[in-house]
Image (cartoon, rainbow, N blue to C red; front, side, top):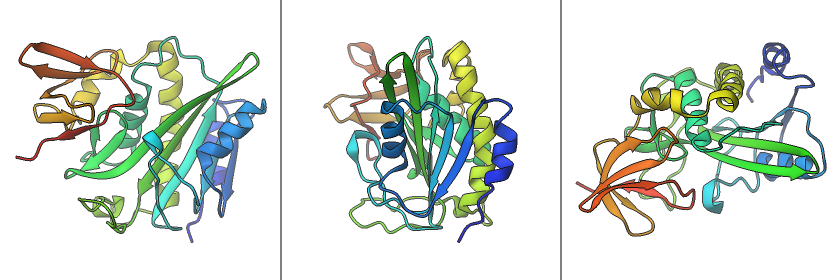
Length: 251
């Protein structure tokens, strides 16, 4: 079982977040679901919640996230944030995680980390309001070791392919402080200052794409607000709906 760097992370982050706590649980339904329940109950203390195993882990659009202890890193971070503009938040989170873990990790709009056209990690962001309080819950799942490809057209990527000594605990130690810093920066400046850094890792840039709502076109990168830019015969189209999925077309 992983050794979790809870105390080290607390020492790094607590000067930035008053009341910050780190919790590691052997099993829970979903770290995002638990922190959303707490937020709706008025519990607003900044919390990093890690699960060694999730029984009902989920990603964007309700997709399940599978993982066994040690094979994946699943955690959620709950913060009382009030960004002036929410646009591009998932892109900012993905960029922070990718930059913390490895130079070769790419970003797939709007919330996935890829390596060699295979999914390495996913992000789920939710918000809850209780009275005057607004809480953001950022959930992240990362494949640490090779995962079964049952029901998938392409086997997922794993962090060990890029970082052979990787473990869930080591990955968490690398990415937590930069992630908190990135979230605090996003509140002040939004996504625009991150646009060029995102472009350097954009796996959809310049490729022919198809979307889940039937659109096709060439990926032109992302806008200053984090919307996907799609070149179509009639001109450029911006896609900013979190309900739309995008895939590169087969060559």
